[in-house]
Length: 86
Image 1 (cartoon, one colour):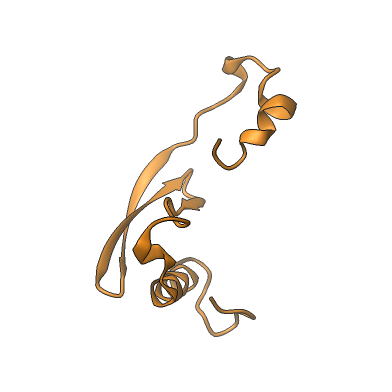
Image 2 (cartoon, one colour):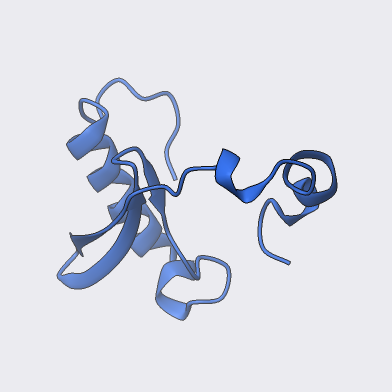
């Protein structure tokens, strides 16, 4: 079961399918330290980083730091004011 699967009995099993709307999915290319990466973004707001728990490259601290810096710089106004680092 994927993340959120435990919500099925409480949230998703009772309403009919026509009460839900599918999220718009796009693929977002990101250059992370010279490594090309393609991530999913849903409704222009939720960035999905698939395979983060098992992909060898995504487990490396330097890759995670570069990706975090990119996200902060591109979407959150820069890294200078954040209070924590990866």
